[in-house]
Length: 100
Image (cartoon, rainbow, N blue to C red):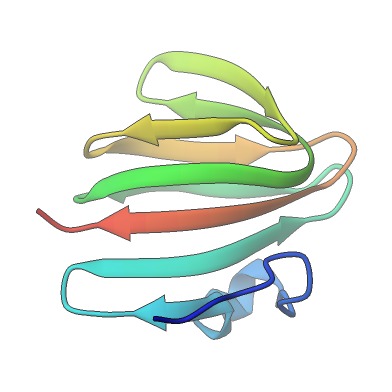
């Protein structure tokens, strides 16, 4: 068992996103995503199921053709999809990829 304080994990810029992975196994990967006010994460094609949990802030989440605004304490779960994120105020997210 491992315990992580998600609010204390250091978050690196998107260009260094591989450093944001705080747990990885054969079927599961967890990372921190931090976007500052006005930033976005470019569109990516996810081949795995994805869970996003908003730790702080609000984010506009694009999943295929759907758009949802999720805020602190909310969670989004999707199967493989085309995803992108953008935030006006800044956001800290825990992202989990689950390979089936």
